[in-house]
Length: 412
Length: 105
Image 1 (cartoon, rainbow over the protein chains, first blue to last red):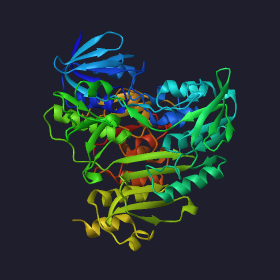
Image 2 (image 1 turned 180 degrees about the vertical axis):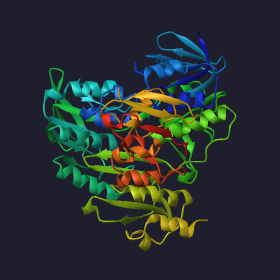
Image 3 (image 1 turned 30 degrees about the vertical axis):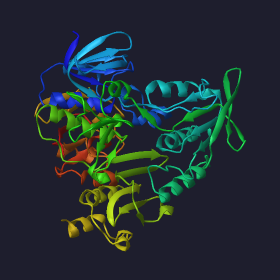
Image 4 (image 1 turned 90 degrees about the vertical axis):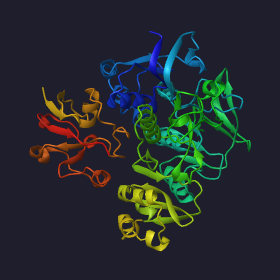
């Protein structure tokens, strides 16, 4: 059959969740998921954690077993990449020549890792960590040597550095800006993670810009920095963000630039086309209504619920405070809210105890928390973010005061 | 064969084969029951794998950590028998365990 009532492009967290929710809402029409990888939907977070470490098999990363999709009558068209979207005829064209007509399209295509643009970026020993094939290729080359250079001090790079250090590799992390996690965390968190990685044996270098990758006979030998230093390397991991996969949908006329623009119901500007997850840009009440693109499992899952409920004519869920987590060594970082635009931070607890939180404030209101081995603050702080409470920083910094006290005392 | 008894949100009873060292969350998910979101994949970072466990098994289950306890507080459906199924590692001793999937939050 060459048509489906709902076609979901992207077999990641958002796409698979959209299909699952549609069936839970008793949608009876045909559902097709189109994925460019050959695999059934799987969890991506373990790719830079347990799966990379070899502690979790791929089977255990599957979001649902193969039989589930069959039983739920969700058709998988895997290994196909969309070349074009034709909104006037509601048709997708695939790069391999196939076509598929849709009643409603849910664009959940995610993104592809950004690559280095410098000479040497295409050596076979240069890896990214976005999908299973990336990590399998990386793991397949771990025997090549012990010297690993990670380009990019964001979550992916740091999680990979933590795993590879545990595996006995000598890891260098290069960050172009002056601190780790520069775009996602406050300075206190950055410095804490920098110290932690150093204590674990990672050579962390900030303000370190890559000039090029060096090699011999078509294979990597090292990384040359802008200051002229050359770091010998057997493997390079590039973790410098993603480019959202939106070219076909923007070419079809959907409004967007850094992603595809969607409204509060996750509708794009094209008729009958929704977009969700890493590739969608949406006004967010937790960012003062600014349009943001959020790369997280929670956001993809939440937007899958928003789009599918709208499609079914149901009210959407109330806006959820964004949350996120990162596991490195024995440290569990849990984030709630969006810190971007904060103008003050409050430290709760002593980082030396390896359990503390950083509260982010904007105009005196709590907008986000980063909680390191501090699940209680994360759980109780969520309410403060949801309510956007103004709380005296001196009180916030007192660890003897549970955060929930503030929520009950000042709600409304 | 050690068996886990799952009651879905729709009230359907499903028998699931136990597998050592897998979490109850993984067993439920691998059985094809769609109810469990398990957004964090078992990292004990959310509460979307919330279940109610059979009281008579309470002593045989792994003790609840502070993290699990705190995360369960995010659910408006928390009760006496609440657990996060990702934190319940399966062993033969759990043969016959009954869990009920908690309502979605």
